[in-house]
Amino acid sequence: MSLLVIGSVAFDAIETPFGETGKIVGGAASYISLATSMLHNNVGLVAVVGEDFDMDFVKNLNDRGVDTTGLQIKSGEKSFFWHGKYHMDMNSRDTITTELNVLGDFDPIVPTNWKNPEFVMLGNLSPDVQLKTLERIDTRPKMVVLDTMNFWMDVALDTLKEVLKKIDVLTINDEEARQLSGEYSLVKAARVIREMGPKYLIIKKGEHGALLFGEEEEIFFCPALPLKEVFDPTGAGDTFAGGFIGYLAKVGKTDFESMKQAVIYGSAMASFCVEKFGTEKIAEISEADLNNRLEKFSNMMKVQS
Amino acid sequence: MSLLVIGSVAFDAIETPFGETGKIVGGAASYISLATSMLHNNVGLVAVVGEDFDMDFVKNLNDRGVDTTGLQIKSGEKSFFWHGKYHMDMNSRDTITTELNVLGDFDPIVPTNWKNPEFVMLGNLSPDVQLKTLERIDTRPKMVVLDTMNFWMDVALDTLKEVLKKIDVLTINDEEARQLSGEYSLVKAARVIREMGPKYLIIKKGEHGALLFGEEEEIFFCPALPLKEVFDPTGAGDTFAGGFIGYLAKVGKTDFESMKQAVIYGSAMASFCVEKFGTEKIAEISEADLNNRLEKFSNMMKVQS
Image (cartoon, rainbow over all chains, first blue to last red):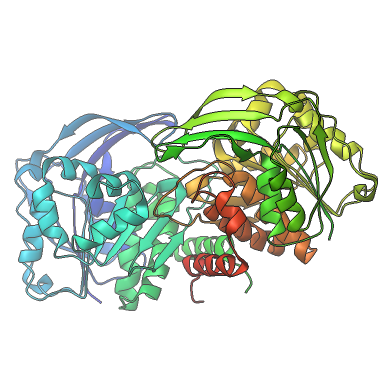
């Protein structure tokens, strides 16, 4: 089924204990589009870049079946740029530079043929832009998934709460769930957040896996694959979201059982993402690689009944 | 099958953000014995207490089928005592008092009828005492499980490494696995630690679940049950170990598939432990409570194939 993706498409420069990159392609919607296009080829992208952007990356998205009609290319302007440095444990990072550039006044244009998507992925971005995007869609999608981060809770909480009322699934990490809800226990946090609007909450815990909360007693847990090396965690959460919604759009279902499978797909995709810098790994894996990894997840979770 | 348990039986005083206890029964072997006796009634305890110890607790163990012939009661001496205070997040704690008392020169006496146990649980204790216990057993058990902590890695690493050569399963937490192996990645840590002796490694990650590592590609992950409140984490790791080995002793198996089930039993037991102070909750749960909780774990982990 049709899947509309919105989010940042941008440049990153990343430093980790393993090395550093120059300017490479990053941004939530880049990771989401790459991940989702592994599973599904009815994907439309709404985003904005400057004239400095890497058009080979856009061509690659097109080759993978992503419709980039909704990607605005602003002549005379520069793409969003983030420069960050990870600490030794890879769990925390410092931002060295953030240049908003074209993202500062991004007005999301939804192409006419994308005004009735069945699935919508609102990637991490200003809640204001996420809200505008939803308002420019004509019919209520089967499922709207929203990813956000602590930054937007700090600076745009009211607008974020307004968007939360209009979505089905929220994906955030454990600290963000605690911040948004004011509750330390994730069980209590999930209850508070689900009362804000989303019927489902996914708490991404990085190396500790992901929790999917639904109706009161519905909880599903998917582990993260223990890895020999985590090379660069950038984009893992976006890749997770892309795998998650890509799977659901592919099977065209939104029931809890399908969402469990989707969480496993998202986790498998994210486990690739961290193995190389930026989008490199997620862009190069094959269907066989993915199936092999899904098998590893299955083995890790399976008990004989 | 017969299961020999050794470890501390002691007094604790616990402070958490929810309140504080006076002197209550604690100690690794107390939690292990209580947990394991839920599943199995061929359990022998080797431990030492002073004449100040709570004999009602010992009677309760006897009523639950635990043979306490190997519990030495030292007249004129005092039981081991630990007083600790947990921080707000419940993940870290300060030790306020440690009084070794009878544990300072504990010489473990294995009763004659316990010299050929099929399963042995070496609870957290000086590696020297763990080693002595193994030396006083006549035949190699089917399975020896050892639990330890960072303290013994700091002060008795050589002896600990000696015991590791003689055991089958090591249970430690993630930070301890990193300390013992010198590797940050848990996959690499597991490889290094398994080369030290134990064929299997269980990494306890508290609220983030437990990982069981076996042969190269054998990994099993069991989540922790998300809880509304964690009231007191004391003894959760010991309770896990008790549930783990109690299940294996009950079914009399040591294959990887049975160990997976055992990890789930251990996790379910530990999820009760933290709901009240000390051993209170684990002492009061019924078989129906346990089965109900095992069902919750199953639901949380299950995907339709």
